[in-house]
Image (cartoon, rainbow, N blue to C red; front, side, top):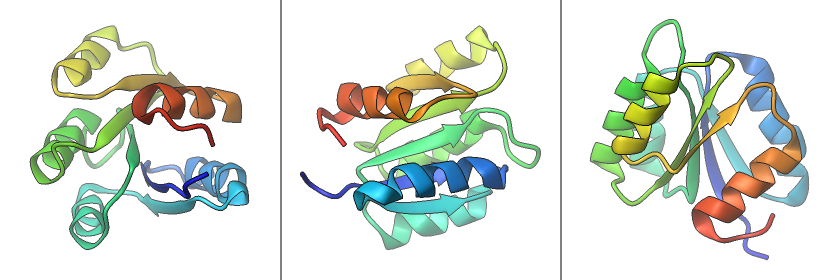
Length: 123
């Protein structure tokens, strides 16, 4: 099994910790950033297999982050995350190239499923 490079963009530390504890356990490399400038820096310095981006963050709207991510890495599989029911934003993200959306709170099986759907790899 290939070790994945996973980018997590979320303002809440607990989300990054969850990815590190669950997917990091399987040997995947997890990079956690909390804002747009650090997201862009991470994308310029590394090649990721998949990214998870929170839709609702205090400093930057997730849609704005998605646009910037796709401008730098158009082929990157991006999954949006949200604890809110915001269908309009989810649909907008899909039109911008997001391959899915996880509803918070989620379980490791939810992440595994969306990675399999997005990039065709079991973790």
